[in-house]
Image 1 (cartoon, rainbow, N blue to C red):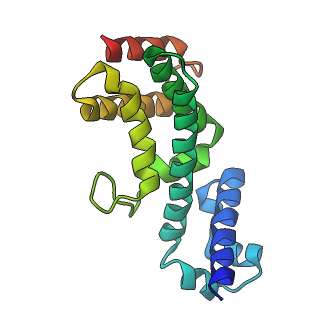
Image 2: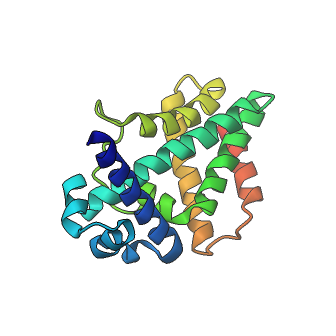
Length: 181
């Protein structure tokens, strides 16, 4: 019984993500999710208290994926400078490749707890990778990691809305030079 329940939960999250990636978050409704998984709408709400909770579950999945991408980028780097650049590029790359997921993680309102005792491990892992990348440059790596994260998020949003050119290489180089100086 618990296994079937978890399978339904996974199917709901996958369907929500699929609709969001194909058509945007406004296309994610309980009726469409129920139809996609061949259950009724009450089944959706037996797993999630609201549609916002479904989107939060998608976001948690995204944080896990982003943490994995950042960890792999950092691990494959040959130097601290290389790690910082690789993590930054991996962040920007993830945001560009998964815009709906990124919106669930960072743009839409959320009930997820950040920087608190009950913060989920996936959220902590993603931020920890950014923190580890800046660790060689400051004793206050937490603060520097927050500044880098905010800068990467800002660059992501400016590129997505065509307020700055999409390549961002020059801006990223300046940002990384500021972090390492």
